[in-house]
Length: 243
Image 1 (tube, helix red, strand yellow):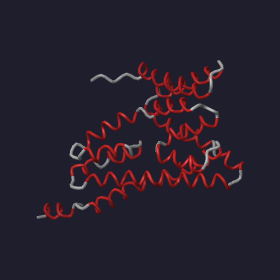
Image 2: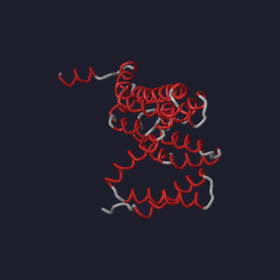
Image 3: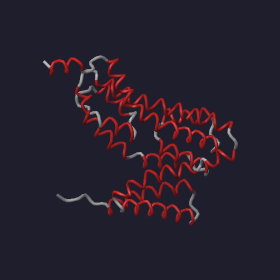
């Protein structure tokens, strides 16, 4: 009887699944808002209009890539350089999408395609904590609500940052540029603690970038080459453990 009661208490309707998805997405929303706000301010500082920086969040929805894109725009990089650098940086999303699709075997293709467009490191991690939702009736609504909560919070934060970038003093907005480096350092340090060779890869990418700039290459292509060569060095430095 207890099992039957628990089963009947499980969320079955789309509305209930949406509420659960929104609840699961709130921690992501709280983390996204300050970062997106910083992105908006930096984008305004780089010369992007409020419409352009907001549309970038709508169409790209990738924090690290958007920060890198803003930085490359600020140094005068071309469109092709930004596209290639973004593709390389986001290549991990192919792997995440495959894992996500494998988890959603019970959900139809009409749901899988739009859901995969909303994958970020954070939405992927939180969705991985709730694999049981994919097996439930209307489970696709849970993942949709989770992703849309993160998505709209990122867009709103970006827009708000763009608005603030127009009214706050220039000295303050320029000082927020340190947030870009702080974010990447914050992402790197925990990984280096787990595997010190990742720090070596980061140093290789940094040195390649500096060398290319020193040889007269544009900052945009220097970033692209540093990212590619640094990433390829990981193939040699980090080998899959046997057994």
